[in-house]
Image (cartoon, rainbow, N blue to C red):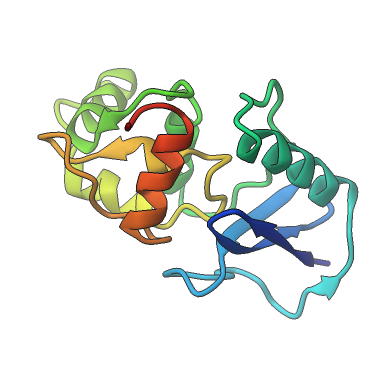
Length: 164
């Protein structure tokens, strides 16, 4: 069974979703892939949704959350690998798609990894902000490719003091 509720963030209404195993979705309403993977969810606050709400309250108040809600990742093996690497990007820092691809290649023993393939997986991230896809930037520092919109990406990075 899947469950969902709304969350009003300072930069737009969000949908939070969970199932019996953990948090399975967090999207800005109307973003690309909004509510991807949900199938007739029940409107209900679960322990996982409450945990995500607490995390978001801390984050949007300018504090660095000291916990990660229990996540239930659902995607291809490659997508899940990329999303787990996103979780390793520290608060207040950024990494390029190319650097992320190099890190994944190095850890998996691959000779190389396509930055475009990594970008595709980053773009399919179903748990925005908590899995910090907004911390991934273009090769020359440009803000590109955020499913919630580049202006929201800019605001999230400002909140983390990455951008002035």
